[in-house]
Length: 417
Ligand code: EPZ
Image (cartoon, rainbow, N blue to C red; front, side):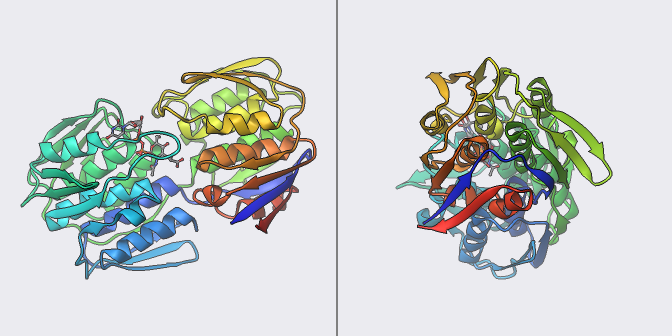
């Protein structure tokens, strides 16, 4: 297993190019199952999760090839409709093959994802929607077994906005008979980008990115040739890096309009932003100001940025209150930040962060994707050396992180343990 060794305290400077969005690429790759032929997806980041999705599709009989940010998927010979536990347990997003397999082939057997470090992560809303569309859904020894001659359009209300739930049911609805309405749907930019990919395949979708999405079923979809949006969470992570190290970093390929809530909070903390020809310039202040955040579904403050923001607040002037409302256990990074000297008290879904002047390097353990990102953010500002073990968590969602950091002057190296 690899670990990262970071010597902190340096001011960074230069340009970072943001990679394609992992959480757009994953559902869009799954959507290739809705058509028969060669789909090409551009600006796909080279990540563990992308390769896991590729293996999953290959398992179903698809051809999968990845080179230079391009994923090529041939779905002419899909002959297996099962996503096995040993693959699904490594990546929850595997559940995204359920909707398309059911819509295109009338049957699907997908392992229940099981929980993960940040929470139970149920899929009851996915299954409720498929049943409303006429599917027969059974749970048997850890698997979802779903069947439907042909799904029919339905009106589906989500008790809470679910990103992959919205995506799974959008895929199911594209080939259903009649029209489907998804209400209280997830509004994330990745959902809107995903809908654009489906529309490029011939799907009839209105309102993606809003709370009510209308999908009119069609008989057939064609393969796609589609280019995905940049990763707003990677961009946001580099913004917190600029903030905590007092640096001057320009983000290329960054879509500022996808990060309003985060940028507002980073401005409160004292960061400055400048739109330029070559990208978005981010300036970290000499001293950070504390501010409070509460994670919410988009367009609220993104839960995927909560851990990184906490690292930032751990060295801000004053006390900040961080409320996590989306997942029940997304404070795994707190114990590790405290090993660096951070002063944080957790009570239920609320963390109280009292800013200290300087974090100190320490040996740390990554526990989940965004927790590992927050440890990198903290280590870059900490005094001395930090070792971060189990960085396969980081590799799930950040492409060439140490290369991008070294390019702007950070002292970071990857060591094989
Ligand atoms: C997506 O996960 C993202 N993953 C997550 O990113 C992200 O944190 C999350 O959305 C929230 O924004 C991908 O897009 C691949 P949800 P998802 O369904 O779809 C509850 C990362 O770091 N819920 O929107 O699994 C659930 O428990 C990852 O890149 C139900 O109760 O999340 C949670 O409290 C981590 N029943 C809330 O909804 C359901 O059937 C939001 O979950 C589904 C969800």
